[in-house]
Amino acid sequence: MEKTYNGRVSIIVPIYQGKKYIPKLIRMAEICQEKAQNQEGIELILSNDDPHEKIEEPLFSDTITIHILNTEINRGIQAARIQGLEAANGDFVVFLDQDDILYPDYISSQLSSIGDDDAAVCRCIHENQQFYNADRKFEEVISKDYMMQKGNPIISAGQVLIRRASLPKIWTENIMRTNCADDYLLWLCMTAQGAKFVLNQDILFEHVVNGKNLSLDSRRELSSLDEMCEILSQNSVFDEQGMKQIMSMRQHVLSERIGLLEKFREMFFVLNKMAFCREKGCFVGKYLQSEGIHRVCIYGDGYIGKRLAGELKECNIETAFFIDRNAHYLTEEIPVYQLEEAPQEVDAVIISLVQNYDSVRNELRRKYKTKIYTVQEILAVI
Image 1: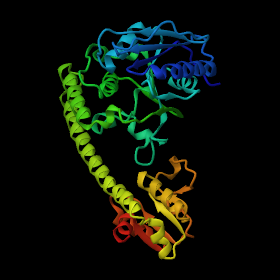
Image 2 (image 1 turned 180 degrees about the horizontal axis):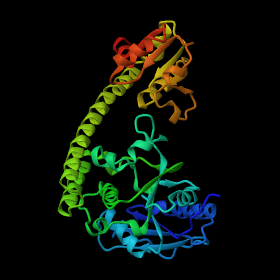
Image 3 (image 1 turned 30 degrees about the vertical axis):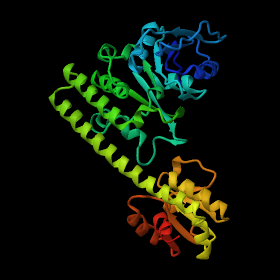
Image 4 (image 1 turned 90 degrees about the horizontal axis):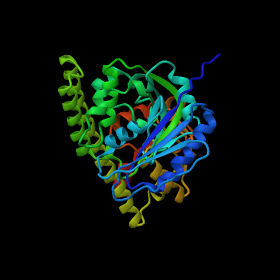
């Protein structure tokens, strides 16, 4: 019989110019409590980090306890979390961002998963699709080796239920000046003290992306990463070999970030060219019609692929399906297949990638005898 773990859970939420999120946060915690039927209960701690916008008391709930902590000075997300932690009564802690989402079964599933371990990490949704996939395998990236060599594999602290007794003093006593890598510092300090992370295969959390996400600010991210490395070094969290791994990881993150920015730059030029062509009345779909093409598949279910499918629909060109190596992790109105599983009955295949499309074309030619285009090739002739 599966053992169910009870224990009071403290959901700690830093609030900054986010009073509009409070009703949703209360209801979300109430639903989690209803589903968990946790005898110890849930407390929601709203740690307000905006001195100019007080959260008025009291806030009421019939099923959860609500604490409000206002501040006289803006101190940053880590300090707001620690302020909430100091007021918490829970055996377990969830550090939730104000706009992120806990699914109804979050508390019950995480409590059941954690067992005697220190933290439970659940699967999650990011940008409307699964964050862990064929390129980022859940079982491989949630590990000490990955954290020390590659970067932070946890998209947001809210996807982790933490045993309060396992929170490291180094994290609570070293407040970072630059927001961004404070949760990464937490995971590294926990692994250094031998904490065990259990993997919960349930999808229980959604990371909401908007223009204000700190992870989208590359300069801030790298500055925060440098500060994190300094804290780890000054506190001798790892030995000399461990710090060498950490510094190598920093270079890896920098290289990845540069590569991602280059990819975004190329995507911008493609999307800009698509918009420019539309302004002139030159549609990709009209060009395909002139080539006798009425039914296509699109390789790559990403930003460009989705925009392309929408434009083709306007011209009555059917996008029969997408081909994507992460097909098993995607849910779309249009079917998505891995290449080896994809049907063959289409008039053409359109590659929506901005990088490595020549190697993809060679793979597609082994299966498809129809015309194979890249979006760039079509935009160059319409």
